[in-house]
Image (cartoon, rainbow, N blue to C red; front, side, top):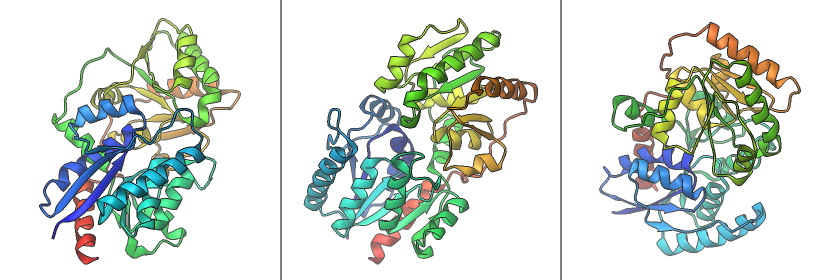
Length: 363
């Protein structure tokens, strides 16, 4: 019997974390995989697709210009439902917390398709932080046939929400699979100049604060003039507008959006990382790097528990003072970075694909 499985992605983080699963599923002769793109983050998506040499089977183009969350949801749910119904999928794979992941899961659930949820169980326990991602991932967990939790903490979060234990599998995070391949030399990166402090800022909840955040980074660079700063830009117009309006210090270099392999090479090289990203928290902890995270709350508590992540409110009035203090603290107490296994051993994709195959067979 041939099992028809759809795998849905739209953003670069989804592609990166699903890439090893796509590769692993090629080993199953009885699984017919359809790779579906929803069309989000198109420029960043295309970079990631080239990085991992992924072929897209269908492009649904769900994004609408200047659409609200409700408009995007209504359009997506209808298009996804019609497509899934026509394809008669046995299973659907979604990852993370995007709105397209949510509506893919709901469309599949309504049609009686098994939903396989990669990276389930991340929780900030605040529906507004991040918004709407916390709601998205909570709802996807409810309709998933199997919740693939990256850590025991994620599993416990799901159990607190009364998700049945037989629908939870702790697998590790597929980002570790990717990072170990990069470390082994399977993927190559370009050299983009030396960097002491790496900065990435793009989160929706920080958009109104971006002028304050970038000005604070600028002041930090001026005072620490011997340090080399690199800010990786983001294609979001709200981010670009602020960056382009500023006159940065001489020791700050603005980089265009990077391939994932180039980005990881910068992450490994940097002495200090300042970011509001969720994924960087996983990558840095895996690589043993310390990160200053400019967010009110995080759904990835593992790094905080290990002392590798310091959470600072991006709206605090003494942000510069705190950043400067931590910058000097990290520089004066630098330690050799060691790879950690809090997010798994690098075999998450193998475990996930095996469980998907078994579930399809047993349905």
